[in-house]
Figure 1 (cartoon, one colour):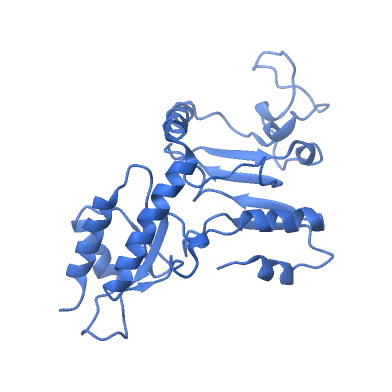
Figure 2 (cartoon, rainbow, N blue to C red; figure 1 turned 180 degrees about the horizontal axis):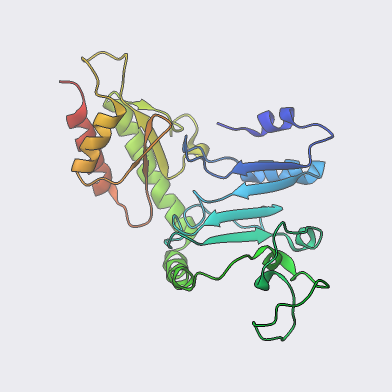
Length: 260
């Protein structure tokens, strides 16, 4: 788990920016963005947030938690498609930054038709739009709009409460079955529990020869349980459409995969 104390110890007078994932894809750890944001504001450090694992699932507002920039793909918590991402850049910061690449939509050509390419005397678009490159993915944009509508209809706070409860139940069940929990334990660090649970077979624990990660993964696949294998661990993630019945199916499958 990444803590504010670790980050503070790694910073000095030369530190200009901190980049951090709001939720780790490899551990499921949810960091304390509020504390990190306050530290960065006090020290004049830019905070850059990778929100791909959390946006649409965990409550986050740049009004309450100031950050310099935040980015995410739309294919996860926002219920969208691959091939599209979202970017927030604080306005006053965007005005000081020059993008590495230019495109038709990243420069300000006023009311000119899109066929007008401009010349070498150009003005960058205001705000984060100056980082827009390539053509817009219209299909993914329509899917994103529908996904955001679904998330907004329920509310991110309610979604977060729901998925953290599911993850806590699965985490406790995983350990009761003898598996090793790699994500935060709900009874030890409830504030760090996200919608992601990471586990590995209980090698070294009594009860016979445990199957490999790949063997357990194959049993989960056979049971129709969507999951990922990341850095030697099995990753299971929840969203608003999951329920305690899903937790039960996962635990039943993991129970069958244990040594006799």
